[in-house]
Length: 212
Image (cartoon, rainbow, N blue to C red):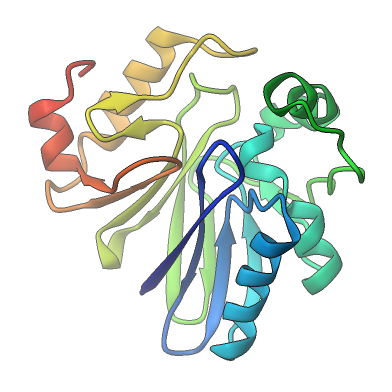
């Protein structure tokens, strides 16, 4: 599986495009805000002949979902996310104003499919397992590509850190419990692609993460 990272918006969020030899792809956490950011994603997809099949959200905080409308308008894909985060869509305008001082120019794309623990996301010859790991947000999901030893963790787990838990619906104990029981049980070599900052591994976090 190939992984391409676009670091976007003032929060420096990572938008991921993942694809395999079939050229089918999934877009994870499209946080594109500017026309330049949107064009970079669109051009990469076109230049590499990719076929977008899924728009996935680890969670629905504004910095991870700003580009969902762009993806829907361009490719006809509605976001797939956990229902427990749906309330955040109604708060996106306020979030954007409070954190960035900007106005939301269009309505957020509605969730097209609810994802839950144990679901599978399939595209091409690739498969992602859906893990529900709340605590950063009520509906936080992690996408695990078992065959490729890759984990797309959103804001659940970072290199030597964890997601903040002081936002609406956050819970520190719930987050720690979920990380320990669902993520630290994975193989050490599992690559963790985070919503912000550096990529890490499960083995590194098991050994060095001060929160765990």
